[in-house]
Image 1 (cartoon, rainbow, N blue to C red):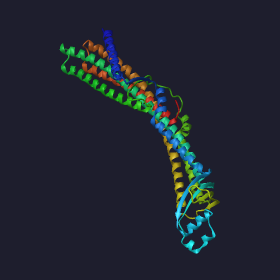
Image 2 (tube, helix red, strand yellow):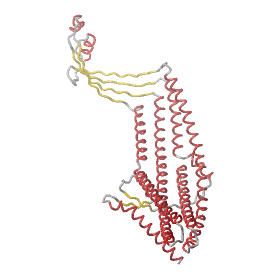
Image 3 (cartoon, rainbow, N blue to C red):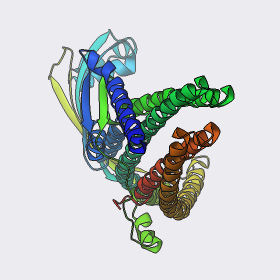
Length: 453
């Protein structure tokens, strides 16, 4: 009789589980535009690497900083331009100068009356200009700072990848947890419904009072409410996972991996060097180097700069004409002796920015080491909680088996049976929660170390 009772419970639990699975995917199957995707954790990580929007934005940031760096090629490459200028005037000085440029000056043009009151003259000037930077030390250091900024943005891209991987893992594990919670609730609900039916039969036979029967009914109602809440939480996690890996909203997800206890054998001290090599720490190091270059650039603003220039020009009274030509070649030596404390304030600002970058680097490094120790301890604690929860679950299952047997024989109170059901459900939930905590802490430790453990 006992075996028959537990066989009924097992069959009922399987029926409820199968029914839940069918209900969980029936809505997606019913829509013509929906698909079901079997998804492992490694596949989810691969999809996120290709399709996640944060990673793609970080890639574009690299392109932006690289384009900014390419602008500094103007420091050593010549700048070429062509200009066509049209001018008409009766200004005495300008008019005489234009005639000179057009090589049209005659003796009659030196008549004072003509010089003082010239006729309107039109000039078209076609110019070819070239400028060649030669010596600009401050801008060279600015270029070096931008080069380090490019490297820093590349490291930030790597850090974004690891951050998204952590989010995907945590969401994947949370979705596993929610589905497992629903399975536990469904199993408990099947057993509670079986006990409710027995309680109602006993109540009709006068073996228990109405309060005991109502307690069994309240238990069923509470489990149904928990099941509804768990379903909503599962749907929310599915939406979040689809967003992170770039799947369409109509795609239903069926997970293929589960929560487990992957061993972590490396001691905590072995992770210290890994923190220093982390991408965001390296990005801050590049930031310090860039700030140091900017400080050098600010100081070199007091050094003179030398640049070359040249121009070849055609002048004519016709558009794009080439009647007369001339050229001009020269060099510019510029030394800003005083700029209203602009350069001095620039040096002070660069010095403070360098100190700020150094402090940010030290702060992030120490904070990361503290966080690694904290997560490592949480990981070890979660492992112990899993072991305790497994023992507790076995004991609660045995207690429920004994009380169920006694209840079937009319030797156990309904309240004691319900309490045993609740204890088993809580033990299963605690084990799931401990497994989830272990896996999420392991994922976070991998994120903090940028290593697969």
